[in-house]
Length: 70
Image (tube, rainbow, N blue to C red; front, side):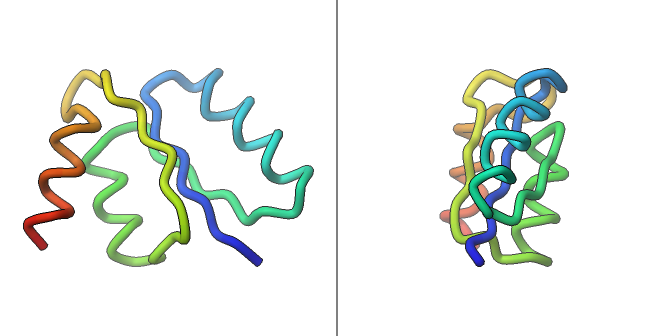
């Protein structure tokens, strides 16, 4: 089963996307911000990450930069 991480600071967006993908047999993880996403990525190794670019504490671009550095 594919594992997907949805990262968005808006709960409604996360829940909608989670519901959509779960109905299609995808294992779904969620994070409300970039720092949480980095922890989940390190622990769970998702196959795909849907990442919001505009978030308050850490933008999606900053998350990508952090991942590239590792």
